[in-house]
Image (cartoon, rainbow, N blue to C red; front, top):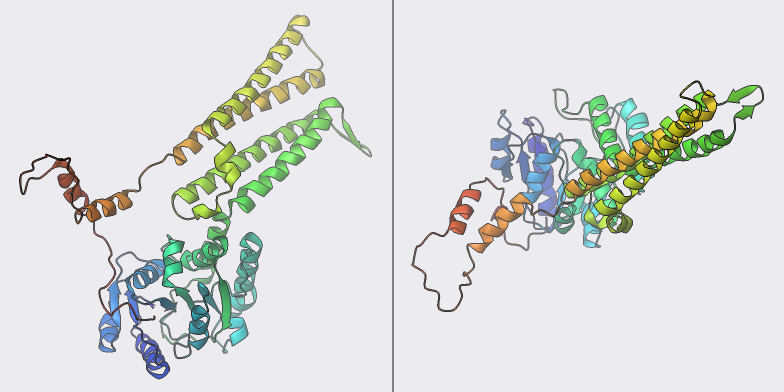
Length: 432
């Protein structure tokens, strides 16, 4: 359970969870991810037998991540500590997890929402809208995308490698489970009115926008690629026709002015497509997007060398057209020319040069994103583990006992980082 000043309701949530563990015979633990409560929530939790994990990074996602990471069970049931979810009835979640599902979502719309438990704008607009957007963007087969109670296997949690620290954590979990093709299902759950006397931490408009923004940023195809391809196609088709002749729509004549706008659409479309590749690559490098979802064509064909070749070809074509236009101008003694005739050479020339330069710069930036580097924290962990292995010295090498090598000095310096390690509590046979 995430916790930030939940003294009013935390005890009720823990008692419900404890009752479920006692009556069901399930061996488990109750872990509270505390975000720095100052109302005595930590003491309440400890007095009721729960384990409190201090999470210094503020945020809903950070608190849950800290609690789940520190837990010892095979499965984790996460839920808000505002007494709105029924921790005393977790059989549906546990049954599905034991059946092999990686993520089990609660569905409040099928389980029942009590009067006053959810504002009308959240119930009839916000949640259905965001859930449907999630289905469209990612193909997520869930009816309640942002239900606060859900179950996840510890193995699936580690595979997801969740990175967000705020409310986006809930969306990231569902999206990654979908993208990584994990087994996911739903079970009905009930939602009761918030048991606190103070306003909730949730801010409907702000947090709704944060979820929508995250889903859009997590879907570079819908945000950049598809709009970019549409603009490119429209600009190429209409602009291609205008290069040869004007277009007449009844009494409306589309000519040089429309060709300029088509050129703008083509440039903007190409830029959007390149942005989609950069966004996807960056998300993969930062762990926001799983590497298993990388399309093979990106890594096989889009390289620095191919990008430089493509960009140079476009620029050469544009420069050649510019030289031809200059020669035409010279033929007219650098005097006045028919605007539409010379513009049909100059505009494509300018577009080709711009696109060539864009592709070249994009190729260099993409190469920066795809540099093969060792993650810093992974390097620290590797060095830490190496302390427990015997060094492999060549035969005949004599070392002085207690000598400090440069590598050992570097290891000592790097290991000054503070790391979160799992609690050495109950034995590994704890279920959740």
